[in-house]
Amino acid sequence: MISRDKHPSPAASAAPVRKRFSLKVALWLLDSPHLGHKPKVKHLAGRLLKQPARQGVVVAQSRLGQLLCRDCGSPRDRRIGHQLLRQAARAGDAQAQRVYAELRED
Image (cartoon, rainbow, N blue to C red):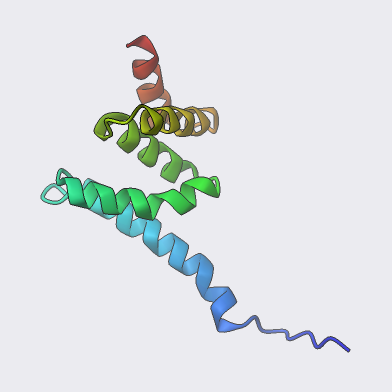
């Protein structure tokens, strides 16, 4: 017989909190006037944004897409950035719509 606890395990309930925390930290790093322009900080923020963006978090898709399009020299990264920006723009993110439109004009 399978036992069904009414209370989820601590590990199961901590996962969403960790994801939100990593998203908040990444956004804080990118928005920080002193840290947001440093390449290593951008790299760390990109890594923190990757999982939420894959899971469909619109703000993560928008910010990671911008980061990849503006700060990466690789054509593959720019292509992924365009895809993320397009997804965020379609979901209604105004900043992603503006940036995506600017990139399409270039």
